[in-house]
Image (tube, rainbow, N blue to C red):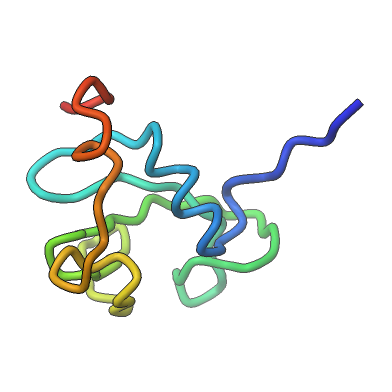
Length: 94
């Protein structure tokens, strides 16, 4: 029996895996991760799960209130990132 990875634990791999099925609207992807006490994505399970928004046109991740948390060039389309919806036109787009 294999153990499923908890995709709500924040990591680069889990961002990429969530993007495969994430809703895309208004230029951002909706992701869910555990949140730490400051409301930032957590690298370990916590009691709080929050929504985060990835804007690939700028490589930014924002919190539930759309406040900028950080920039990561790995998710920036201007740096070569190709979002899943562009790879798979039949993907879930809202």
